Length: 168
Image 1: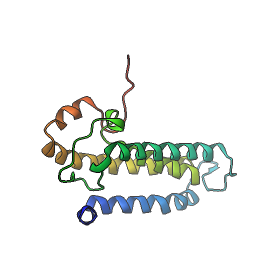
Image 2: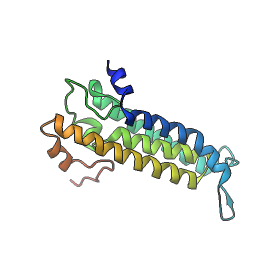
Image 3: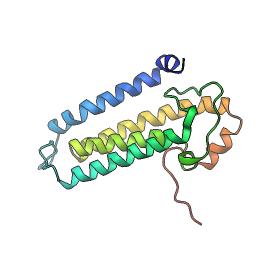
Image 4: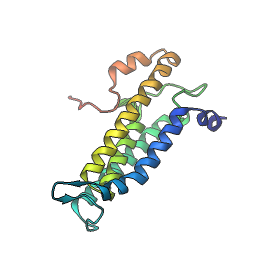
Protein backbone atom coordinates (compact mmCIF):
# COMPACT_ATOMS: atom_id res chain seq x y z
CA UNK A 1 0.00 0.00 0.00
CA UNK A 2 2.73 2.48 1.01
CA UNK A 3 4.84 1.68 -2.08
CA UNK A 4 1.86 1.75 -4.46
CA UNK A 5 0.87 5.25 -3.29
CA UNK A 6 4.44 6.50 -3.62
CA UNK A 7 4.62 5.22 -7.19
CA UNK A 8 1.81 7.60 -8.14
CA UNK A 9 3.68 10.64 -6.79
CA UNK A 10 5.36 12.59 -9.62
CA UNK A 11 7.92 13.95 -7.13
CA UNK A 12 9.14 10.40 -6.52
CA UNK A 13 9.64 9.74 -10.25
CA UNK A 14 11.33 13.10 -10.77
CA UNK A 15 13.66 12.30 -7.86
CA UNK A 16 14.52 8.91 -9.40
CA UNK A 17 15.24 10.69 -12.69
CA UNK A 18 17.45 13.24 -10.93
CA UNK A 19 19.44 10.51 -9.18
CA UNK A 20 19.91 8.63 -12.46
CA UNK A 21 20.82 11.81 -14.36
CA UNK A 22 23.47 12.84 -11.83
CA UNK A 23 24.65 9.26 -11.39
CA UNK A 24 25.25 8.82 -15.10
CA UNK A 25 25.69 12.45 -16.10
CA UNK A 26 28.39 13.56 -13.65
CA UNK A 27 31.08 11.32 -15.17
CA UNK A 28 30.04 12.35 -18.69
CA UNK A 29 30.03 16.05 -17.78
CA UNK A 30 33.45 15.67 -16.23
CA UNK A 31 34.80 14.28 -19.49
CA UNK A 32 33.22 17.03 -21.57
CA UNK A 33 34.04 20.11 -19.48
CA UNK A 34 37.34 21.93 -19.22
CA UNK A 35 37.85 24.90 -16.92
CA UNK A 36 40.72 27.03 -18.15
CA UNK A 37 43.87 24.97 -18.28
CA UNK A 38 42.63 22.38 -15.78
CA UNK A 39 41.05 19.27 -17.23
CA UNK A 40 38.17 18.12 -15.02
CA UNK A 41 38.06 14.56 -16.35
CA UNK A 42 38.27 11.48 -14.12
CA UNK A 43 41.94 11.12 -15.07
CA UNK A 44 42.86 12.18 -11.53
CA UNK A 45 45.01 9.68 -9.64
CA UNK A 46 43.11 7.45 -7.22
CA UNK A 47 44.39 9.32 -4.16
CA UNK A 48 44.04 12.84 -5.58
CA UNK A 49 42.86 15.26 -2.86
CA UNK A 50 39.63 15.99 -4.77
CA UNK A 51 38.80 12.28 -4.81
CA UNK A 52 39.44 11.93 -1.08
CA UNK A 53 37.38 15.04 -0.38
CA UNK A 54 34.58 13.77 -2.64
CA UNK A 55 34.58 10.41 -0.86
CA UNK A 56 34.39 12.12 2.55
CA UNK A 57 31.53 14.37 1.39
CA UNK A 58 29.70 11.38 -0.12
CA UNK A 59 30.04 9.46 3.14
CA UNK A 60 28.86 12.48 5.17
CA UNK A 61 25.81 12.87 2.94
CA UNK A 62 24.90 9.19 3.24
CA UNK A 63 25.29 9.43 7.02
CA UNK A 64 23.03 12.49 7.25
CA UNK A 65 20.37 10.86 5.04
CA UNK A 66 20.51 7.62 7.04
CA UNK A 67 20.21 9.54 10.33
CA UNK A 68 17.16 11.32 8.92
CA UNK A 69 15.57 8.05 7.81
CA UNK A 70 16.19 6.39 11.18
CA UNK A 71 14.87 9.47 13.01
CA UNK A 72 11.70 9.41 10.90
CA UNK A 73 11.11 5.73 11.61
CA UNK A 74 7.69 4.39 10.63
CA UNK A 75 6.71 7.79 9.17
CA UNK A 76 9.27 7.40 6.36
CA UNK A 77 7.88 7.69 2.84
CA UNK A 78 9.40 8.88 -0.46
CA UNK A 79 6.15 10.70 -1.24
CA UNK A 80 5.47 14.33 -0.36
CA UNK A 81 2.22 13.22 1.29
CA UNK A 82 2.58 12.04 4.90
CA UNK A 83 1.46 8.50 5.66
CA UNK A 84 -1.94 7.92 7.22
CA UNK A 85 -1.56 7.56 10.97
CA UNK A 86 2.03 8.86 10.97
CA UNK A 87 3.28 11.15 13.69
CA UNK A 88 5.19 14.39 13.38
CA UNK A 89 8.87 13.90 14.21
CA UNK A 90 10.88 16.71 15.84
CA UNK A 91 13.72 14.68 17.39
CA UNK A 92 16.99 13.22 16.14
CA UNK A 93 18.04 14.73 12.83
CA UNK A 94 14.72 16.59 12.70
CA UNK A 95 15.75 18.70 15.69
CA UNK A 96 18.47 20.23 13.49
CA UNK A 97 16.77 20.58 10.09
CA UNK A 98 13.28 19.90 8.77
CA UNK A 99 14.54 17.92 5.77
CA UNK A 100 17.68 16.00 6.78
CA UNK A 101 17.19 13.26 4.18
CA UNK A 102 17.06 15.85 1.40
CA UNK A 103 20.14 17.57 2.85
CA UNK A 104 21.95 14.23 2.98
CA UNK A 105 21.10 13.39 -0.62
CA UNK A 106 22.25 16.83 -1.82
CA UNK A 107 25.56 16.44 0.03
CA UNK A 108 25.99 12.85 -1.18
CA UNK A 109 25.34 13.73 -4.83
CA UNK A 110 27.80 16.61 -4.61
CA UNK A 111 30.44 14.34 -3.08
CA UNK A 112 29.76 11.64 -5.68
CA UNK A 113 30.30 14.08 -8.54
CA UNK A 114 33.48 15.41 -6.91
CA UNK A 115 34.77 11.90 -6.31
CA UNK A 116 34.27 10.84 -9.92
CA UNK A 117 34.92 14.02 -11.84
CA UNK A 118 35.93 17.36 -10.42
CA UNK A 119 34.88 20.65 -8.91
CA UNK A 120 32.68 22.07 -11.67
CA UNK A 121 30.53 18.93 -12.17
CA UNK A 122 30.20 18.68 -8.37
CA UNK A 123 28.96 22.27 -8.23
CA UNK A 124 26.46 21.58 -11.04
CA UNK A 125 25.25 18.38 -9.32
CA UNK A 126 24.92 20.12 -5.96
CA UNK A 127 23.09 23.13 -7.39
CA UNK A 128 20.71 20.95 -9.40
CA UNK A 129 19.95 18.73 -6.41
CA UNK A 130 19.47 21.76 -4.14
CA UNK A 131 17.01 23.33 -6.59
CA UNK A 132 14.99 20.11 -6.87
CA UNK A 133 14.91 19.25 -3.17
CA UNK A 134 14.04 22.82 -2.19
CA UNK A 135 11.02 22.62 -4.51
CA UNK A 136 10.08 19.16 -3.21
CA UNK A 137 10.38 20.37 0.38
CA UNK A 138 8.02 23.28 -0.33
CA UNK A 139 5.45 20.91 -1.85
CA UNK A 140 5.82 18.53 1.10
CA UNK A 141 5.51 21.29 3.70
CA UNK A 142 2.14 22.36 2.29
CA UNK A 143 0.87 18.88 3.12
CA UNK A 144 2.65 18.74 6.49
CA UNK A 145 1.04 22.01 7.64
CA UNK A 146 -2.34 20.58 6.70
CA UNK A 147 -1.69 17.20 8.40
CA UNK A 148 0.02 18.27 11.65
CA UNK A 149 -1.31 21.04 13.86
CA UNK A 150 2.13 21.98 15.28
CA UNK A 151 4.07 21.95 12.01
CA UNK A 152 3.94 25.73 11.43
CA UNK A 153 5.55 26.40 14.82
CA UNK A 154 8.14 23.69 14.18
CA UNK A 155 8.93 25.29 10.80
CA UNK A 156 9.53 28.64 12.51
CA UNK A 157 11.92 27.06 15.06
CA UNK A 158 13.89 24.65 12.86
CA UNK A 159 15.62 25.59 9.58
CA UNK A 160 14.70 23.80 6.36
CA UNK A 161 17.91 22.42 4.84
CA UNK A 162 20.90 24.03 6.53
CA UNK A 163 21.33 23.70 10.30
CA UNK A 164 22.05 26.77 12.39
CA UNK A 165 25.06 26.84 14.65
CA UNK A 166 23.57 26.81 18.13
CA UNK A 167 25.09 28.97 20.84
CA UNK A 168 24.92 27.97 24.47
